[in-house]
Image 1 (tube, rainbow, N blue to C red):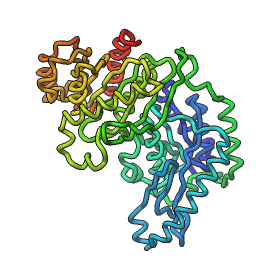
Image 2 (image 1 turned 45 degrees about the vertical axis):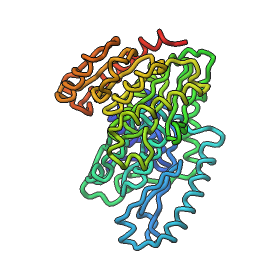
Image 3 (image 1 turned 180 degrees about the horizontal axis):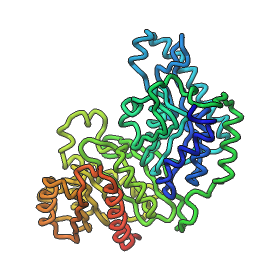
Image 4 (image 1 turned 135 degrees about the vertical axis):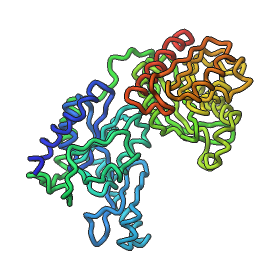
Length: 442
């Protein structure tokens, strides 16, 4: 046995997650067995705790074997290999999914009551379970919190099979596990006490957590300006299309930064969500949205249609300024890759009224003849090892007539994947926006 019980496993897991303490962290436990583990983690990190509601879709003849999972907000994950091996017919799958969807809704009411889910948008979310078996439930949990706008997702479990990282590659930004034994057959074999929990156990854990983080405590201490903050999914109207987005504006914000994603990525880009979280901590709002519809994104040519992207960005800015939460606030642009060119192109419009622009590993050169017309203070951030893009940024900088600065992050490559690189980008962007938006705030 590796662990005496789930609480002990949670304390050991918390020690491995100590690097997250002090950050804007939310801990989500997978009910029911993951809640005692998550409670110990949340206590150690001094973070709020909630449930991440997902339901396994079990094979009819072997309910313990997951053929998929569902989560809140319509998230659905299917294991095609298991479905084929078990020869599950579509109508059978539909019945099972409907049954589990009803159970999901029941648990939401039972566990939370009238309390809303803990806000995760723009924050680091630690998803905790008592172990991973097939990975379908964990995958659904990761996708659920991404759909809710989490800036960074950490999946943490005490025990898992040796190939668990391969199964869940790309689903979380960080995977943490205490043990991956080769003789893994089931999670319960590694606990001396693996007693089944009921709804009352989950409610009791959440009640204790609510006592430690009462409603209204999160985000306390930030000065308000009489304007209520928002943190929600939105539909951005851009000309004839409607684009999915997420708007987060903390109380007391001095400005809102609109993100222009590049290379075909969307509002769920983990790197941009990471930066957005840092901006929130600096008292800035953010709007992350998809520049292209799903159909448009399939055509690679649209990714490099800077005029189209810039037009969408300008329309989104007009939409943003009409929102009560952003009315009168300064607006800035944060662009990555081709999105940086779109940001500069849009900022060059005579009526843009953009307070500041930041480019992360961008292609400002693609804004071409529009660069001399940019009046917004512009910060260009490039990885020191990204030599080709660095050269293109230097060429573009020579054409800017506004206040501007080019900063290289030593040793960083194009995606800033090196330890500490993205944190440095976030610091630079936050300081640039804070300095220039405060002056532009009306």
